[in-house]
Structures are given as C-alpha cells and as structure tokens.
Length: 296
Image 1: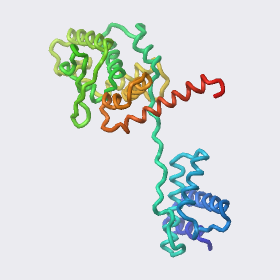
Image 2: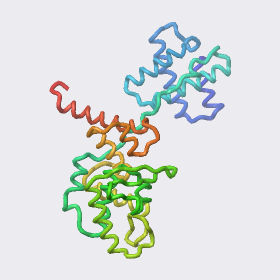
Image 3: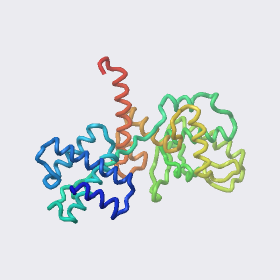
Image 4: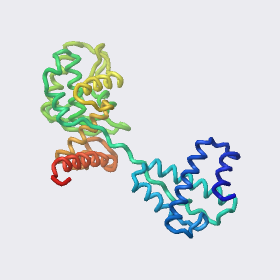
C-alpha cells in the first residue's frame, strides 16, 4: 500500500472523516503529486522540499485559485506529512513551516459620487417633514464626515462648533477627534435642529438626533433610514452607514486627499487600516484606464 492510500484509509477508518472530506484530501494530494512529478520525475514524497510546495501554491494562485482554495490544499499536504512523520514513512516534514496566502479581504463597497450628489441635491427626493429633514441631515453627516454609526448616535448639540465648523467625535475606547465640516452640512444641521426644537420643546434626551418620540435614536432606526435613502439611488447589495463611511473615504482619496489625512478623519489607529481604500480607488483608476485608453 502506498503512502497516500495509507493516509486516506487513516482518515476514513481511524479519524472517521466523511467520504467527501477524504475525496477532497485525495484530490489535493494527487494534484500536488502530479505537480512535483511533472517538475522532476525523480521526485517523491520523501524527497520534495519546502520550495516545491511553495512553487505549487504559487502555480495555483497564478491559475486564479482563491487564497481559501490554496490554503485548503496546503492543509491536506500538511496533514499528510504529519501522518507520514508519525508513522516514520518520511524522515522530515517540508510543509511544517510553510504559511498559506492571506485571505484577500473584499474591497469596501461605496456609493458613487454622482449617486450621492443626486440623493442629496435633488429636491424631489425630500419633503419638509421632520422625518425627511432628519434623514437628509443624517445622510449628509455620514457622507461628509465619514463618522461611524455609534459616533453619530452619540452626538450631542454641544459637540458641534458652528463658528469653526468642527465636530467633536467620540470614537472607539472613548477616544475623541475633531472632524471639520462644510457649509452644506452646517446649513442642514441648523435647519434640522430648528425643526427638532419646535417639535420637542423639552426632549427627554440631549442627543442631537431624536426619534419621532423625542428619544435618542437606536442603531436600528438609523440603519433603516440609511437603507431606505440609499435604495433610491444605488443597487448596491449593502446599504448601511458603513457604506457611507467607505464612500466618504473613497471620495476623499479620489479628489486628492492624502492617506494620512483620511486616516485622521476616520479615526483609524494605523494607516494600514486606511490603505484598503487605495485599492478601491485603484480599481476605479483601472476602469477609467480601460474605458479611456484606445489599446486597453
């Protein structure tokens, strides 16, 4: 009995793994064996080294396999060599120190600038009701400052400095930062606050944004407002406050803001967290290139 069959029987009868799992492991091992045999017909399970395994993984990535697929194949080879070492079928484990590729994080979704312009600027989208004034102000605030949902819910009137157009935001671990804002948000906030004060003379809460009952808004209430508003202009599957945060960061970078500036505005600890938005803007750049360049 050869080593791979012995290993598969071990999985099947001693570890009681499902037949599907056994077949998956068998497929990965056959693929790897075929790879190293094609590289050098003299290679065997006993003589392959770490470089061969790394080259095999790289060849899978070059073919377009996802990081998760490559990691699953590597896991099968690792398990095989651990088994072979325990049965003294091989003298060393070339897979021991090999790390799989990092799983690629999905690019953040964002609403296009023209879609946000239509949502905010088209008057037919909004009425003069308290609910619509509040909703439009929330959308503008998210889009023009990039603050988080929890940060918006926690805002109070005295966090707004209209004289300097600055917002005091309390982020994660009660860390505070100052975020500037423009004339459009200033106007929206003043109009909203005026209507809110007429509707609730003595509100039970000192929050900036109040529900229809005069209480601090819940996460769910704000999420539903954002989802309803974004549904008017975008077909994105995800329509959340965080998408507006992504939209803010993407718009800033697309219009010339530096990465460090965007990091500070978003309240990120590390610029590495902010860098994901550069991938988004690069994707946009590729689309522009493909559409504009005559030979693309």
